[in-house]
Every structure is written in C-alpha cells, then in structure tokens.
Length: 291
Image (cartoon, rainbow, N blue to C red; front, side, top):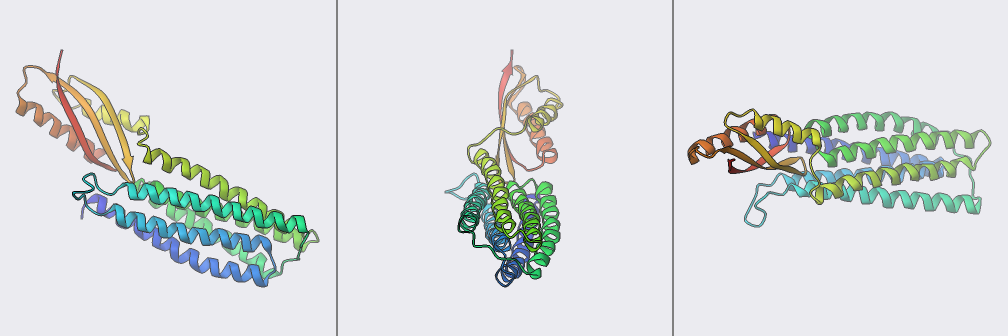
C-alpha cells in the first residue's frame, strides 16, 4: 500500500473514533442537561454535537481526497481535506454563536435553575473522555500532517475546556449561585468561537496556496543542494493540499551537461525529497544552465 493511502486510512480511522465517541457522549450530555436542568450542560451537549458533525466532515474529506487523479482533477482531490477543515471551522463558529445567544437570553430573563448532580457528573466524565480524544486525534493528525484532523483534535480540546467551564458553573449554581450556570454556558461559547476562527485561518491558507513553512523549504533546499551536479537552486516554493505537499524549483547545472545527465540529477532530487519530506507528493523541477 502506498504511504499516502496508509495516511488517508489512518486519518479516516481517527475520524471514525471521533464520530462514535462524540455521538455517544452527546446523547449522555443531552440527557444530563435536560433532566439535570443545566443550561451549561445543554450548551456543552450542543458543542459535542458539532464535534460529531465535524468528525463526519473530516471522514468524508479524507475519503474524497484519497481518490486518484482523473481527467477533470489532474492534480488529485487533496483540497477536499482543506475544504473539510473549513467546514469544521464554520460549524464551530456558528455553534459558538448559538450557545452565546441562548446563554445570554437566560441571563437577561433571569430564568435560573439549580442543576442536579447528574449534570455535574456528566461534566466530569466529558472532561476525561474529551481530553483523551484530543490527545489521540492530535497524535494521528501530527503523524500524517493533516490540518483537518488536527483541527478536529482542537475541537475536542475546546469541548473539554467547555466542559470544565460547565463544571465550574454547575458547581457554583449548586452552591447557591444559579446565575453561574448560564454564565458558564457563555464561557463555553468563547472557547468554541476562538477555536473556530483559528482553524478557519489555517484552512484559508491552504485553499489560497500559502507558502510552506520556512523550515520545510530549507530542508528541501538542503536535500536538493546535496545532489552532485547542482550548482544553484532558485525559485523554490511549495504548497500544501490536504496532507500532500507539491514542490516547484529551478536548478542550475553546468551548461556543458547533456540532457540525460541533467535529467538524472532531477531524478535524484525528486527521490531524495519524496523520501525525506513528509507528505511530499510531486515535484516539478525546471533546469537552466549555470552562468
């Protein structure tokens, strides 16, 4: 199996774990929020529901991105993963605004209730599960260099943080300060919106062909410069499409070199970069005579 196929399969597996875990957790938290009379927990349940939706989006993105190039998409379908990351971000932002609105209405109307203990335990369980899910998903996303999966991981972390806010609000409400429950719901929205804006920026960069990190470009330059016969490297640039990296460069070689010799140099550069740059999918190398 090709390395990219392995990465896509790993990414899809991580998304499936998120879908199943979030769906079960959403049902539990919604039950605890309704029967435990907690606005903070119901808001937290909504946050978890958006987690399920975004994990599904990530899964679909990986599925489409794995499709091989065709006549209509000669460069492949890698941008599907970036689009999935953008959808994840927008759902986060909209979900956060919804939570903020609902919590504000409760505070304005002073429609306070003292949450029951089931809401308290739901918050504790959610914190533990979501923190584990964050670490698990982020580890996979970092391994295969997937922004949509890392975005999904931060969504899990923001849910864990929102559960902490819910826990504080529910505890305070049960201690005689019921206004703390909707205030906690408002705090949850801040975590959600902030995470969404951060992830939207990352997805936007990929869709607009933002430059690769300087560290990655320096490594590409170093690997290419080590190939015998390369006199100079210029116009080095790269872009990311999902978990795949595409590289363009111009190299200068001795003007007395034959076409075949110059071609062998490009083959060596290509092999070196594809083997040592994580996510490298294709490299375009233009050859010029060295003056």
